[in-house]
Image (cartoon, rainbow, N blue to C red; front, side, top):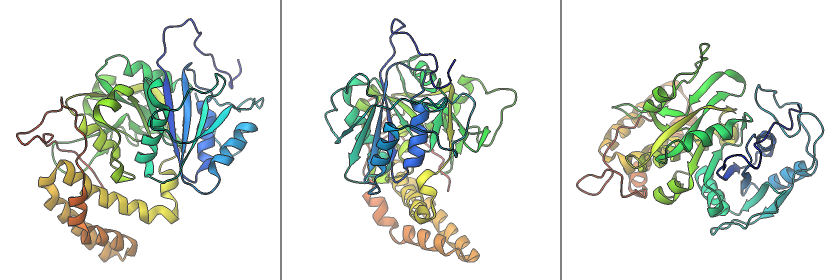
Amino acid sequence: MSLASPPRASPSAAYSPAVAIILVNYRDAHDTIECLDSLLALDYPTFEVFVIDNDSRDESLQAIAHWCDRPRRVASWKNLVGVYSHTRDGKCKPVAYRFVEPCTAGLPAPPSECKVSLVASNTNSGFAGGCNVGIRSAGQRFDYFWLLNTDTVVDHKALRALVDRATVNSKIGMVGATIWYYNQPETAQALGGASVSAQGLVFKNIGDRERFPAGLPDITDVEAKLGLVLGASILVSNAYFKNVGPIQEDYFLYFEEYDWALRARGAWSLGWARGAMVYHKGGGSSTRTSLHTFAMALRYRNLVRFTARFLPERLPEVRRQLWHHFARYLAQGRWRGIWVVGGALRHFSALAASARPGDVPTSTPLDAHGNPRPVAIEVGL
């Protein structure tokens, strides 16, 4: 059996919900192509891939199109157990693709042989905005949207496992994967996402840095702890998107998945697909030196925005936390940290005031003032 052509479900098999896979690329064609190479070998019959380029201005889409014309495996890509690829056996057919513009009403279906749409966005609206562009461009033809970081590769059965878990219960709106570190493939980054505790503003990925030699834990045990789905891999239903609304874009990057889950608290539940294996390089384009300061600043500023939106009574606590970090950076002579935290403190009131309330489904528990009931979400820096 060719690894590049894993077995697929027959057309006569039970109905398989249609899935749009959304990849948001920003100046990272190399990782995006490796991710795409693994996606094209998925053991799932009804999916399309939408690559949203966030105004990279570096010919990213042209590089991806060139690879589709002449697919090839690159030496730096790892061979990971369970990860098949279009190029793995060296006999690679060209990949049919199309160039399209973003479309809020949903793009028309492509020719049957075309599974890849390259979408050029003329603005860089961050991960959240790029995902919203992808979902709206994919449109109502799809039952689910798989939001996937471009610095990942996936097991060939991952999408099937995600959909199987999502369809168990119609109240499951988002499903997380079992995410492993790409460079340490026996070490987990997260089982679905992160847990939350009763106090503080710190979160913890479930299973982070664990190896699980005796096997992964039970699904019910993990889902009982699941407070949010990790943004590296989120399968979200079309019904959830319609009910809860799009991802909040003013974060640009970081905190958007926490916001999205919290807005649906009480109306929808979160799931974990135990068998959906995703390998994540971690950070991707946001960890490059040139972008590190920007990413660090977003983490601090978005902490203020998130707290103002959902837990305004804790803003004084967050301010104290920022002063503590500022003093620590000052004592260590870490000038980047001093500049970043200083900026968050200088603009603290403006950031809190600018936090727009998220759309909340009517079935979400509200307090006497019509606001979502306060829930303790742990968010760490």
